[in-house]
Image 1 (cartoon, one colour):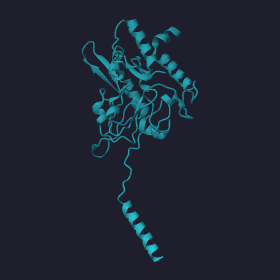
Image 2 (cartoon, helix red, strand yellow; image 1 turned 90 degrees about the horizontal axis):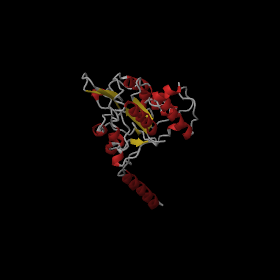
Image 3 (tube, one colour; image 1 turned 90 degrees about the vertical axis):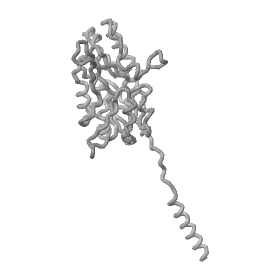
Image 4 (cartoon, rainbow over the protein chains, first blue to last red; image 1 turned 60 degrees about the vertical axis):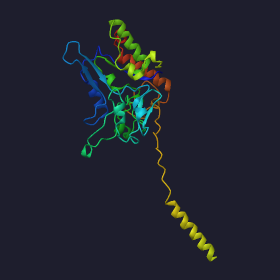
Length: 201
Length: 80
């Protein structure tokens, strides 16, 4: 198996925010924290483009590189996760991330910044799979249930693709060949590197 | 005998005094290990049927089939 990857097809995304809602509902993400969001470029202008953004689970993740307490780890499937029991909520990862993925709940006393929260590719975290502790800290572990991330699975236009990198790349490639345009995969080069740069899938 | 008691008491007092100069380990505990997703979630109503928990190959196949069926609308149309 290749590594788990997200692709957002900007030619298909209609800015319905269904992925955002599915994510918040699936993981019961607290108010003010958005693990996923939809960004629209040239909003209101004919030809506007929308893209769904979350943690891209980078191959060479800058959040991992800058974390002073080394709370991040990468699974064998290429999913970048973190241990909330180790995180100190310093916010370095949010400055380093090119996608703005790390989120910080501010519901505590005096609006103090809490421990970092981000997309887990629906893979939970370092707790027993399917346990209440895992759900409360990291959300549902759909991968261990034999499912794919909820955001992509419920996407009405199938703009957001998630899964084995080889499979989603094949799906996207067949679309590009059929429609004859839209080969630019948003975020792919930044998160996963390019073939020219010597990166591997 | 008296000297032995004094020496023992003295050694214990010195040991306790030096013990206060010690330091608790401050190394980072590090990230706890996370089990692989193909091990499943145990008995759960949310566990998707069609693959065997603990079998990596069947889990990978399950996700590949699910990705194709759920996200590749061209292949879905062709199969109907």
